Length: 431
Image 1 (cartoon, rainbow, N blue to C red):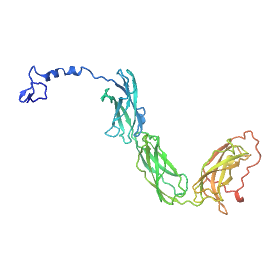
Image 2: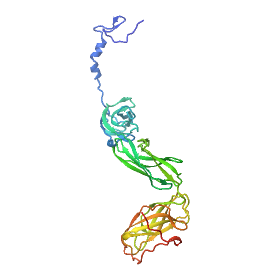
Image 3: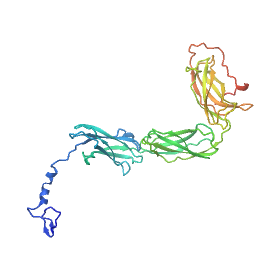
Image 4: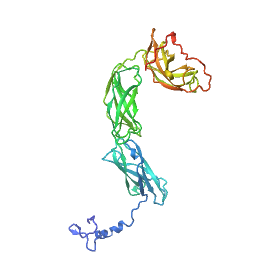
């Protein structure tokens, strides 16, 4: 039978020992002579050319985990309105070989009219473990219905991914403290060793270990710390009333939550600090907040000769509920050397570990000086023979007594509120 050769006629190629063509029987030469004309018979055209790309507008602060926008400007050179089948693709390339490189997403050209152009965007979330450094992206239009490209590649467009990293070289010693103590400071010195400022949702976390405790106790925001900068950050830990006595140790570490909700650690654990916590006594209390001062029952400024309402937010940081001998005291200082205990309110029944607002209405002396006054709050207890302070004085709250607002001011000196049980007034405040 006949054996077929899978060659075009060509005198330079033998088959079965004989040439497969002759000088006038040479299809190989004929095709080679017209290859350029055939190839150019219908030139490839960009039917949806990508004419421009745009650098991410946030590239001066672009970090791993952040979402940025890639832009491409596309023109429709066909006589048809574009459909969702025509899409502009985005392709990334970064340092080395890591996540976020190659094809990252696309945007449809739906509705793009003939001879019209428009910007098309893709929101790309940079992987949290993307390599920082110099990146570029390209774009091209792909037709999913035809299974072919409808434009040439456009690019590269450069942008930079900044690194995000921290370290904590130092922490600060903690003074020995008592269970129930408020605002026990834990300090950490944080360095930004990356190339971008710390974004929102970046925190230094504090971890405490002690008898029956091994866990997170609080955090402080470090957002905005500039590259190369360092600063001290503090978390004021309110030690629980029931915290077991003994040696305690704390550490700190920096974490960030990315735009897509992924948490990642930015530093190693800090050096540790160890201190001793003693057990809370039965009766103890802290005034953790005070309130701006107004005339009692109104929202007007305090005035001489009329009651001013003093507020204290009292925390029972002892192990026992307050009995009938525990009071929240108020002390006032003011112009002309004024300094006096002005009254108190009983806190009977307040449970351990709870906080309650309590107020006392103090009548400002009718003959007192105008100016700035300051009040303080503190817990005291009558032990049967003497008043004993069972907590520190609060931070002072200043308020002004500027005028009498045209009111009739009663004459006379300050009327000091009577102490319970006819006990003599307490000793002067020592601060």
